[in-house]
Length: 215
Image (cartoon, rainbow, N blue to C red; front, side):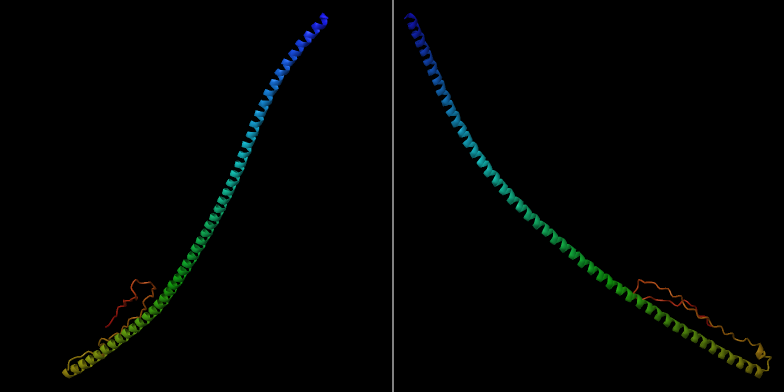
């Protein structure tokens, strides 16, 4: 009986201890459950906030990509316009340069034509001037010959008059053969050398430098 009572007391004590442990573990489990629920709610809230942040970040990235795409499109259009303007300016400058070159070539051709015409006219004028000078020299030579002929005729007349006066006076006149015979010396025609130069004056002038020997 005593053993039975002791066993019962031990069982009661053991039961009370088990109940205390059970209540303690139950309290711990409730606390743990509360902590888990709180942690779950916090985690769920964090996940929701993270999802919202991810959504906002995705929207922001999409907007940035769209803005960047618009900016790149604007840059492409502006670059195309700039290249087109540069090409138009280059073509316009090239056309202006070609027109100026054509005008310059036309002016050079006109100036060359004028110079050639002036050169031909100068050559013709030089030949014409030389012909006139040659005719003038021939006229001067003919005039000089005529003067010498007239002088010879005068000398002949003087000699005849002298011989007549000597014969009339009876003086010893010199024979006709001893009278000084006039010598005719004609200058040799010399053509001036033709020197072609471009004078500063409008028309070239050539002076007659050949001396005339008369008498």
